[in-house]
Amino acid sequence: MTVHRGGWRIIFVVWVSCSLLVWLILHSISCLFIAFPLVALLIFFMGFVLFFFRVPSRRIPEGDSLVTAVADGEIVVLDRVYEPEFLKRECIQVSIYMDFFNVHVNFWPVSGEVTYYKYHPGKYFLAFLPKASELNEHTSVCMKTEYGDVFFKQLAGTFCRRIECYAEPGKPESRGKQCGIIKFGSRIDMYLPLDADIKVSLGEEVRACETVIAVLDKKRLKEASDRR
Image 1 (spheres, rainbow, N blue to C red):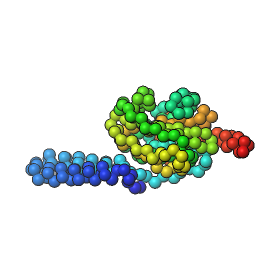
Image 2: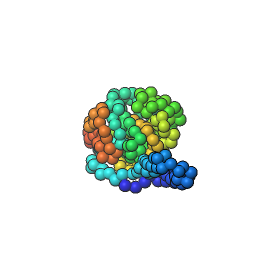
Image 3: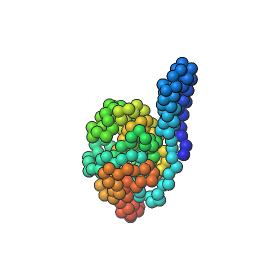
Image 4: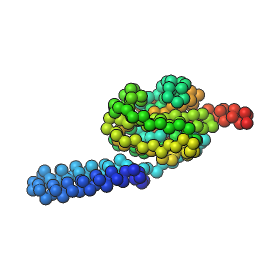
């Protein structure tokens, strides 16, 4: 396990601030029954911040047509919807909600070329609410694969004020590599082709890189080969 590169500055600020507060408490509060709980709380917070920016080692399943989870969390939406921003067609939406204790580093769900990226400023409604998908601050990314397009959003939540995304249109990316991070509670919306074979269910806990969300239709590859 490593620490996300974008977290070191926050970790440094938090650790220095908490260390100064610990020193101040120990030198200004003589009652141990008050000082020790406060110190313990600050040390716990320091550990939690380090824990939050962890990047775990994951085993990536083999298979070119697999779509794996972008993030850790719970499946809160699994439905057929119309995607109006880029794909402009009906898709299968799979949404993953992350709480404070989930890994918040995000990973590419497929291998392919980034064909679209856009940042959308917005509100900070609770991430599991349906309206959050359109109204909250978010990024939108589309990846082109031999089996079809995979579109996904990184959504900010009520306590999230920072989304990082490494998408660059025209750049090829590999499934399981880091694609960004959402800091604190948030959500991922994935939009898959209608013929994708969905492998998860509503309420299921998933793990980024390891959980197979869907298998894309391999007939697309054969049709593309026949056209060539």
